Image (cartoon, rainbow, N blue to C red):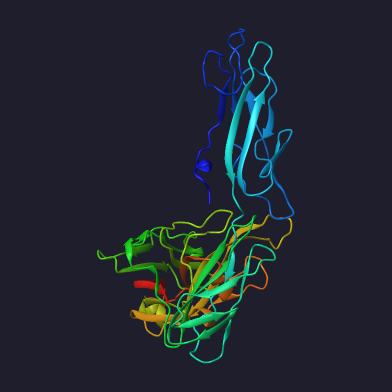
Length: 432
């Protein structure tokens, strides 16, 4: 943990005070006419200690108003050492470094000191929830690992009336939520790390996680997540162009997105491109992180299914393909290589997808099992990804609903053809 010294990041300025000023450290002068000088010593802290077998280093920077060279020395050689202007972080703890200017050319000597904490390396414990377990006599083998190489993770149950743990074997005692902590205590280089999982035993079910409870307006959920829609066709300049309508009632209980487009004459067999989708971000999110993992979002523990309420327009439901793609965009970022090796990679987030075939055009409750219904639809060029591992390791940052194909209505008066897709999402979207 950082001490208060690490939150204070000034440049240390030391004055070579006149001898008549009592209690002023860092040089002498004044009585012989030497000029007082200051040292501007930039804050060198912020880096963690290096992993075992490596040494983290940083450059020391300081300047004296007298213009002479500044030298550096350590006051805590067990924690940090100095060679020239290179500071080496030996171990976690307090590091104190002094910058000195010997004086000359009419200036008195001066010193400045920086004191800061060298933090330990944060430790990530990877402990994936095995999911709901039957209440039986078969022990469950727990598996976890840590970013600290060679370290062993231990397990502990905080619900002994539901489950107990010995080593990495979990024994089921009764119906309920079994809470297990995987822990690694750390050492001189790594900070302690832990991860907690809640495992439903027997008839118990995981607590519901609310992705959104409703809509503040057409652009935001009640939880502050961003909301958006898009529809387009090759027949309309590849954009809504005023044909998309989004409505939210005053109570924010639902969101309806409608895209209706009429061709001036019936299709002549040519290819027609299109797109139709509506999406919502996790609480507090309005966009994905750029060039990095999105760390905010909804974290799946033992939740098994996604639940929501959806309605379609009757024309879409009655069409030959009324399927809806349900996508979970995760916080897992990667640069996806282009199929053309001469082109740069593109930013990408791993995406899971389930195909829903609505059972009614009317508003209907649906539940999609996370392990069984969702597959990885966008791997971003990564190999051997697993749906459950991805859900355990990365948050759900965005949920997207897309029409699988454009709905064609019957030709009107033998001349025009109407495309129409309308989707209504009512009530909350939850994971349980």
